[in-house]
Length: 149
Image (cartoon, rainbow, N blue to C red; front, side, top):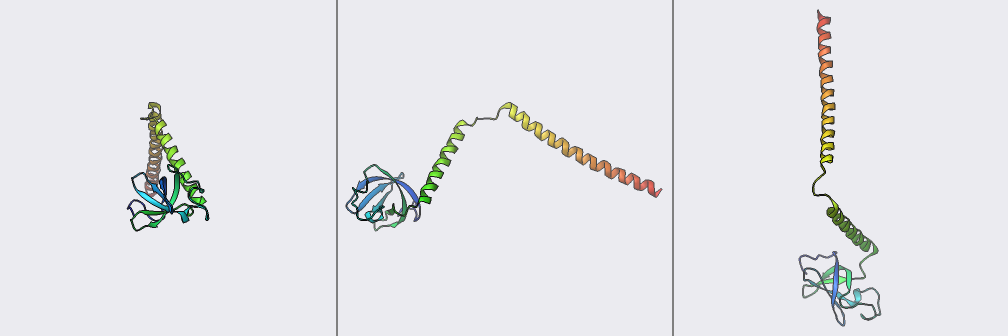
């Protein structure tokens, strides 16, 4: 089994060859996996009746490795939740790509000024609060001195 594909991984592969007992699928890294006919959706149908064709893309799950160290694959063990997760993942990647493509290279000058103004406003409020605390302490000390005199 190749180090990139592990048992339990969901992978999108392309049918590169249909054999009597299954099909060979190719993956982006040049890897090849074997999908046995028993791991295709329904029992009792030949590969041709199941609709597999060379060049077709399939979402499969890695279930082990064969004697040639190729990943063994399953189409029937891919659940609806797996398909939803892959669809969600694809949407997230597309959305992220769209955001990156449409985001400005640098913030606008007005946005920078607004941010600086917000920071200055927060700093001024914090400074005024600290100054108020210092004045109250000084007044407290002054009143204590007058009470002692």
